[in-house]
Length: 237
Image 1 (cartoon, rainbow, N blue to C red):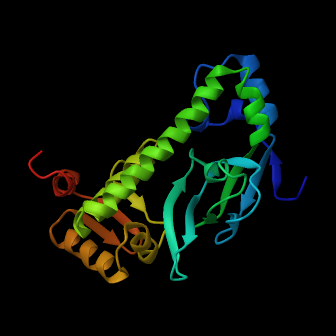
Image 2: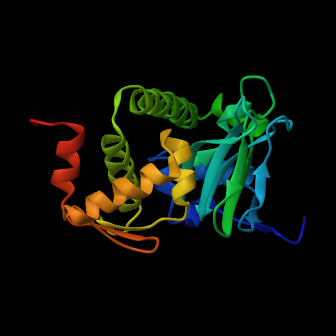
């Protein structure tokens, strides 16, 4: 066991309901505890896994925020997503037994390491776990479709509004404020994810401030008028 690896138990984790199936029997939870044997610390800017590395585990984020990125055709980094506590990353490696993206910590983070061969083995016996893994994979597919829609048909204002509302919504599900967020990612990283230039992200955010929809202080963003942001995405609703 390496110095940055700790013993952890799903049964005592306050994020259990976010990344583990609900309604497990004590014996089933104990068996999952045996699989999720270690916790790994990842420092800010460190990489959890890299594109091309052999896939062996899924990772449940306990604390911190990650970004996933791929190398674009022109050699630039393309951000493909932001992941936070209670979410699982590493699913990209299942298809070809190797990772297809990098996962980089945007702040000091901690993940639970879940060896995939053990998860597959236990899934055959604990149907709730099998359904949960399928649900996670399905959610990832839906998210990918959502991003494609975002980049394919939305204007800059709509993209940024959708991004902010999605971010605070995910954080609220984890017990945080429903209208405030500290951006762990840079505006340049947000632009990379949304298919926008840095200047466009900054200009659009400034416009939201001027129109009284948000308040911004450095990386701290407060949603003042969520309904106005929603109307940008779904006018007339």
